[in-house]
Length: 589
Image (tube, one colour):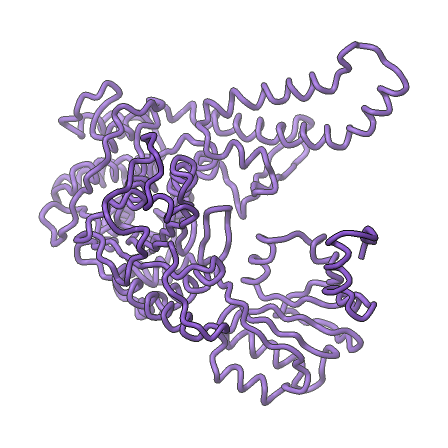
C-alpha cells in the first residue's frame, strides 16, 4: 500500500483499521474466483486496477479448469445456485486447489446448498457470507436483473416458468432495496387481464417484509421514504419501437453495438473499438441529447481543446514546451474521446439520412397529430407512403405496428393485407404475438386494454421528429406529484407518509417547499418494468430527477433491449426451439 501522511484522519483510519497489528490486512496475495454473473457485476463497479490495489493478483473463471495454487487463499464471489456450489465443491472435495476459501454469495444461499458445502469441504471455508447484491447496476440510475430470458418465461403462452421467474425477479429486487437501504411502499399498474405485475408486487412485498424482519440489527425496519412501482411491458408498446433521435438510443438502434462496445474504422483504416460506459465522461454528458445537438457540440469541443493547447502569447519557450509535454497525455485522451463520438455521431447521421421521412410518419402515428398539431384522421394515409418506399422489412414492421397501436387494434382483413404488403406471411408473429403482452392487435379481441391519458406537452418545445414522450415519463411525474390513481395503481403495501396526500406541486412550477416536500427530499422513486426497458425510457429517469431534484428516480427491468432485439423476442413468443430467422437476417436477405 502507498504510504500515508504522518498526520490527520487518514493516518488514524490507516493504523486502526488497515494495519492494527502493523501488517496490512491485504498483504496476503489472493485469487478471486467469479461466475459469469459476478464477473459482469464486478466489471460494472470497478476496474482491474482497483482489485490489484487490494492485492487481488489473479481473477479466475469458476467453471474453467484451473491449476492448484496451494499456498494461496481464494475468494469466491458467486451466485447461490446449484451449478456454482457444485463447481466450488469440486475445487476442494478430492484434492484442495487452494489453502483456504472465503465464500461470498450474491444473495441468500438455500439451506440444502449450504449444508452440502459444509459437509463436503467445511474445513477449508474460513468465511461464508451473503452480501445481498444480485442485480446489475448498468448506469447511475438504471439497473437490470441481467435476465433477458425472463421475457420468454413470463410472456410465452405455454411456459411453465412464469412463477419461478417472478420469484427470482422479486429476490433480485429485494437485494436492490437492501443495497439502497430502502424499505419502499409497493404499488403496481393494473393492466387488463395481465396479472404479472400484481403477482410480482405480492411476492416482492412479502420477501421485503421477511428480509427486514431478519435484519442483523435485530430491529424491524420501518418503511423508508421510497416508493416502488411495477409495470407490465405492454403498458407502452410505442416507445420501444419508435426511431429515437437522442444519441444513446439512436446509436444502439442504428449501429451494431454489442456489449456496449462500438467498433469503427479510424481515418487511417485501422479497426478500433470504444467502450460506451460511464467511465467516458463525454458519453455521459451527451448520451441523452438530441443528435442535432451532439453533432453541433463535438466539433466545438475539439476546437476548444486545440485552442487551449496553443500558447496565449504565441511565444515558444523552454518553459512553455515543458508545460505542453506534461499536458500531452491528457490532451491525447481528450482528443481521442471526442474523435470517437464524432465518428459515432457521423455514423448515426449517415443512417438517419435514409430514414427522415420514416421518422416523420412514425411521430405522426405515435402522437396522433402532425407537426402543426393537426389531428391524423386517417392513419392509413400516413402509413401508405412508408409501405411504398423501399425501406427495410424491419422498418416497415415497426411502422405497421405503430399504425395498429394508433388505432388500438385493426381488423383481421386489414391486418392480412398489411402482412402481405410487408411480405412477412410466414413471420406474422412479429405482429400477432404482441397480444401476449396484452396489447390489442385485432379489433374486438378479448382485451380490456385502453390508451392511457397523456400529459399535455403541447407547449413544450421539441424537435419535429422527437415529439413523442415515453409514457413512463408521465408515470414518473405523476408519482412524484402524488397524482397516480389508486384504482389504476393499487397499493400492495403501506405507502410512506411522504408519498401520501395531494399537496405535491408540479416539478415545472416554482414553489416554496411545503412540509411534504421537505419530508420527501432525498427520497427515491424506483420503477421496475417486467420484460425489458428501452433506452428512451431509461433517459426519462434522469430527466425527471433533474427537474424535480427532491426525488431520485431509479428505473430497471429484467434487461435492456433495442427495437430489433425486442421484435425478435416478440416473434419467438410463438415459437419453440425451431427458430430460423431473426429480423436482422430477414432484413439483409
